[in-house]
Length: 388
Image 1 (spheres, rainbow, N blue to C red):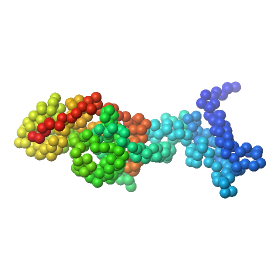
Image 2: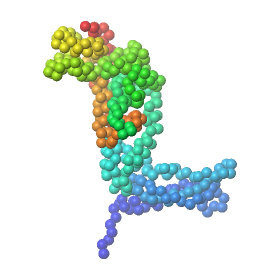
Image 3: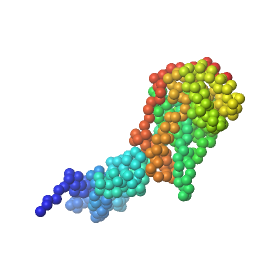
Image 4: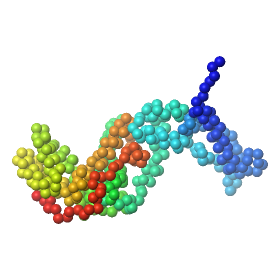
């Protein structure tokens, strides 16, 4: 006769039910007294069976019920702290499911990977419940005090996400404020669905930052959206502004025929990546003279940004790479889109923001220090003549 063999996990799961029920009985006994005492603080009211998933597997547990006596002589239902109402997953299992999902796995892949270990499948509603339990932490993060963070710069941009509402695909814009500390650390300060990028929308973002302790930064890096710049002028009129050179390059290419793109890009990048400030300003003059006759609209687009396209030249050259563009946010956006691509459409702005924050909070999406952080305390050049 062949003898049955059991793994260590099977043995643990076999005793798990008894262990949980023993803890529940002990907590109830502490609340109402021994079941054999004549006088107690309440009375027992049978049991109810509940499935509980732990890291040791899924078991059916008989949860004791009781009525507790109140000071006015009435009774209330006893609620144990081990398995509160609605809790069918332990906190560690919730964290495991949440992290697997945030790492870019679809619900199907999460279920496939964890089903055997947890003793049951992982449903979409289960994942949703795990994420919803993070909402209080996210709300606290959105209201946290920022006065002690030492925010030196701001990068402002919008995250575009595809969502499905009423069976139709829509673009959702999430306004993101990224802060750079005086130690060179990047940190997302705020993300909100404001319904667009109007001046009023960005003003609300900035007022919220001011209310949470952010003082006027040294410089703000923006993509050229007029709503951002108008809101900045009203909130921090003396703040330096750097227009994103990458966005401007894309705009300028739109005014030139495709046959000129390669030459235009070469001239533009030679200007933006010059070795020093005077060389960059000299190449700016040459660019305007050359392209004014070849493609006037390109020069008009360059002049539209004005000196704000060259504000980075006031700073030490070690910082230019991190100052020239809004790439800090663009990289976050690309990483976020890549990870949610397999997870299906998200239906609300709040759920997008919660998911983005959760990926940041658990380290799935990470930040690096900005280039040139060692020179952040050096003074900026105030007398640089930018105007051409």
